[in-house]
Amino acid sequence: MADLSVNFAGITAPNPFWLASAPPTNTGAQIMRAYDHGWGGAVWKTLGTPIRNVSARFAANDWGGQKMMGLNNIELITDRPLDVNYREIEEVTRKYPDRATIVSLMFETEDEWKENIERSIEAGAKGLELNFGCPHGMCERGMGSAVGQEPKILERITNWVMRTSTIPVIVKLTPNISEIVPPAMAAQHGGAHAVSLINTIKSLMAVDLDTMIPVPNVGGASTNGGYCGPAVKPIALRMVGELARHEEFNLPISGIGGISTWRDAAEFIALGCTSVQVCTAVMHHGFRIVEDMADGLSRFMDEKGYRTIEDFAGLASRNFRPWEDLNLNFKVVAQINADKCIGCQLCFVACRDGSHHCIYLPGDGTGKAPDDGGRVPHVAADECTGCNLCSLVCPVESCIEMVEIDRGLPEVSWKQFTSGQATLPEYVWKH
Image (cartoon, helix red, strand yellow):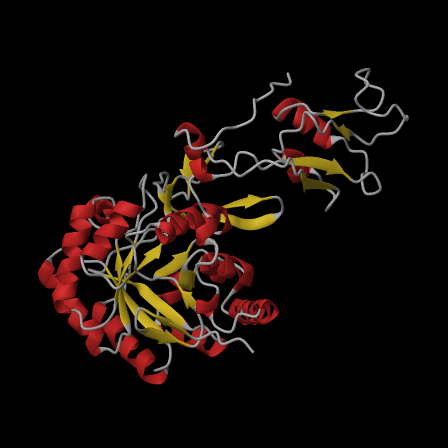
């Protein structure tokens, strides 16, 4: 049976599933209830000088029948007294010594950082997470993503923390930046033990066209917030992959961003993470989702022969490459299974109007499709670019498959071609 336990930068936990710093980790009672359901760790909702929150705070994007495909929030850090938070942290760490209870911090001055690092350690925290990612409210005060977007400042504050901390330090990175590597390297240079990413994406969810007020409506006005949920997963995966493949970056990564199932978690681990953090899915479905996540990941690992998380962590990062390193001689073409086709012809419309027009209909006069009086489209294989748009829009599972064509050509990348190391066959323009 698979062993789900992890050692993340010296922080041990019975499994890689941790709660991200957010509303689900606002109180000790919530975190203890989460631990009872099986969560391996939790990052406490960010501690700082307590603020006043607004009402309302959340807005959501629904898509294709799925509620909360994306969630926007304008809630800030803790609005509860620090003394209360530290008392509850001490209770949680005392009752659940085997869990990864991590304290998220966000302060302005070096003295404030020092004082609260010491208080976190005294309360029994297993690690610290530095919130350099919040994209709203706090960044206007020079904290949160305002730090994460400035590598020199990020490194300086990380160094402040490292002078005091005797427990592992994780730097939480913002996605609101063009390149994730510079701030991650700043965290490494500052002495951090690990990084976590991504924090939420700066966003404005929608506009109520009846009132002309953006949402959520706070007394007739609104503001930008942080976007999270399943919709941000592709962005998070890209940034995690960028770090994992970077030759000079060597810190452990805790993955965050749209993780809702064991499969999502496995993808983050395959790209290089050794723990994952979950927020929106818990806000949507509750703490018990970890039971299915842990069971699913364990079954997957058993099926693949992976004994520990480390056995497959990062295996996919070697296959995440810059575009210029991809094989230009690799070729696939679309193949339509006539027995499964329902004749909706959506693939034809998508290919003609949105792609390369290599799909034809029976009786269209081109002679490129069998004139059999039916409704099954036909792919002109010699014109197909292999873009796979048709397979993506097809409503029938496995009706359209992308089939590899062996052209007997060696692997050649754009980098090799432009450097003169290899040649490519003449490109034939079909249209």
